[in-house]
Length: 221
Ligand code: E4P
Image 1 (tube, rainbow, N blue to C red):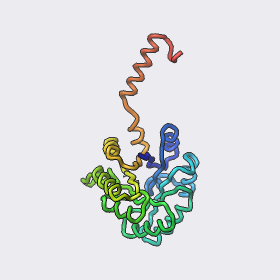
Image 2 (tube, rainbow, N blue to C red):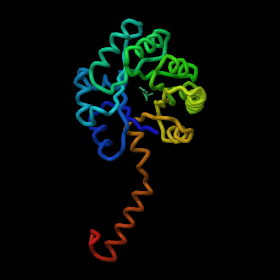
Image 3 (cartoon, rainbow, N blue to C red):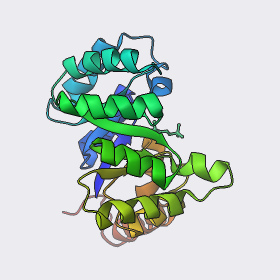
């Protein structure tokens, strides 16, 4: 399963790239709007602390077909291995179909149903991103949507990967991992919540104290 970071914060990316195996970075307009920095400079910053081979996902903001294509080609020109995120709408699906003919890598996003994801996959999207927590927030079942979508893509041997997104707790991540999803993207807070545990800290402290008490030193030799 691919693990991507859903952030454009340079410190967060650097910290987690240093200690974990991360398969890429996703952003959206809300995430990018947190820093007052031009998109091309932000892309350079992220590339500098990851690598130019690290997949980077950047979203368009237009909703009209022609404008989506223009923005997508601009994003595509910024760097190698960049995925243009396009929300699944009528114009979005048309744009995905067109962009695939032009060799642009596409992540279909803002997906709330398995049928949206299926149509985006048929249009040629490389990834489809269902929003788990946002689905849960409208009394839907985010895990069920990801499960259905993953099954449908596998069943029809579509090469598109499911990139589950929008998580607000580790249980959602755990439930998604169990179904064998292709990839997930999570915030740095969720990433840390996956490895931090108070009982681990308590255990480490106890080991340390026992050693110090027995040998009177705070290192192994
Ligand atoms: C990823 O593609 C989405 O932009 C992101 O995961 C949305 O997450 P949010 O619901 O936490 O904003």
